Structures are given as structure tokens and as C-alpha cells.
Length: 312
Ligand code: PEP
Ligand code: MG
Image (cartoon, rainbow, N blue to C red; front, side):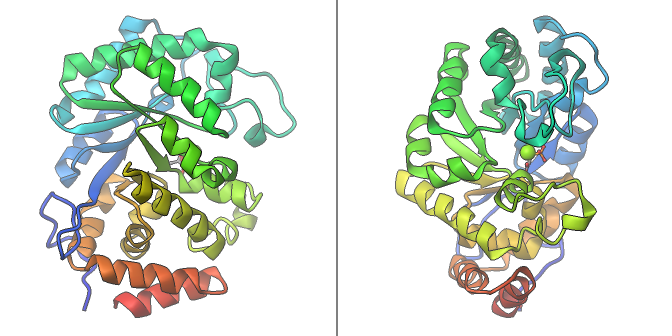
């Protein structure tokens, strides 16, 4: 039988047959970073930098940003941390990146799209992140939110490298860029799937509306299929494809994501031991079998049941 508790978490993510999968934490502030270290996370798969500035009216200068980021990075000296550049707009408005009123904010100028008009804000943030990486000794990568094309990803990666950041990736949250996985992976060092927004945009269902929660269920086979496309492309390109949405925090679904090709799972710190230990109790082949069963299911409920039958 497969295990689901946290009792066997060793701090190094892998399947029972030694297939390496990094088990990482999502953080938004220094207190989260402390909790993430305590959970045994191997690093950070998503640092939501906009959380530092939700109540801030003016753009903090480079030195102020650098100090704020370094405080979050310090507990992870020598460990991998993916810092996401500001994901402002829609559900996370920032005072200094106001894009005015839009009829459909989730489909509007948000995330990286803001930087196309105001690249100097992005460049200052990248400079601060590069400085904080040096101050902390963490192995820092950066990634951009809300990317729709491979061309946008290339634009971001070039700016990140110009700022002296060695590794640049993007989030996959928009179905169009998931469908362009091969071209996308040519432009960046890694991608990380944001299943919260990828579900929202795949099903055209606002993630904040409880009435549409069934469409935003990460077990939806169409969403799993899209994730599988990315996983395959990542294996073919030999580049990491992580998952950092809430889906990665479920020990059953996390193993399905690994079966679909995910090379890392990043989640709320409290979920790290249970996901890490579930993975340690399951072979890669069984993760793949569960993924195949879920993909073949006609709906989310039966996908979950099929994965459970395959693994438990
Ligand atoms: C996501 O969209 O899945 C994600 C991880 O980003 P956020 O939840 O911050 O939008
Ligand atoms: Mg998102």
C-alpha cells in the first residue's frame, strides 16, 4: 500500500525507485521562509514577490527591494529559490503598478504584461533580485508570471540575463503558451506550471468564483492533458518542468503530476512532508500508471478515483 503521511519524509524528494523530484515550498514573506525551512523543503519553487508590496503605494527603490528579498532568501543559502517577478493586477493589485480600470482584469494588463509598458520597473526589480542573490548565497532563478507566447518568454529571459541572473524561466498559466511548449522551452531554462491560473484560463472560469469551483478542479482531465503535454516537452528538451499551483500540495495529485513529467512540486510548507513521503512510497512507473488512468477518465471525480485505485 502507498503511504500518505509525513513520517517518511527525508528532505530529499524522490520516488521509491530513485527518480529525483524536488519538493519545494511556496513563500511570500520572511516568516513563510522560516516555516518552509522547518518543513524540510529543499528550496523555494515560488517566491511571490508581489506579496511584499500589497499595501505599498510607491515603488520601493532597488536597495529597499534588495533588502526585502534577501531577508526571504537568507534561510535558503546554498539552496535553489525561484523568485517570481511582480504578478500585479487582477486579484493582486499593487498601488504602484495601477493599470487603470479594466472590464475584465483577469484578462487584462497583468503580470509580465505590465512590464512591456514599463520595463524600467522590471529592470529595477531584477537588479534588486540579483543583489539579494549575492547577499544571501541562495541559488536564485527568476520567472515571469502571465506569459502568453514564447516570444514574451524570450524577451523576459534576455532582460534577466542582462541583469546577471543565470537562470530564467516562466510560469505556464495561459493555455496558449502550454500549447507552444516546444518553442517555449527553447527560450528559457525551465518552466513552472501555475495550475491555479492555468485551470482558470483553460476553463474560462474565474478562480475566485465559488460557483465555478468544479471547473477549476485541478483533476479535470483536460487540464491534466495540458500538463502532460508540457511534461513530455520538458523530458524531450531535458529542461525542468515544475508545478507550483495548489495542485502540487495534494499527495495523490502530486504523484499524478510526477507521472505526467513534473520534475519538481512546489507547495504551501505544511504540505511538504506528506507530499514528500507519498512520493517516497511510490515508484515512477506507478505514478505514470496513475497519470494514465486519470487522463483516460471522463471527468474530474472519476480521474481522482482512478488515480486512487491505481495508487492505494
Ligand atoms: C498559479 O496561478 O497557479 C500560481 C501559482 O500563481 P498565483 O496563485 O500566485 O496566481
Ligand atoms: Mg498565477
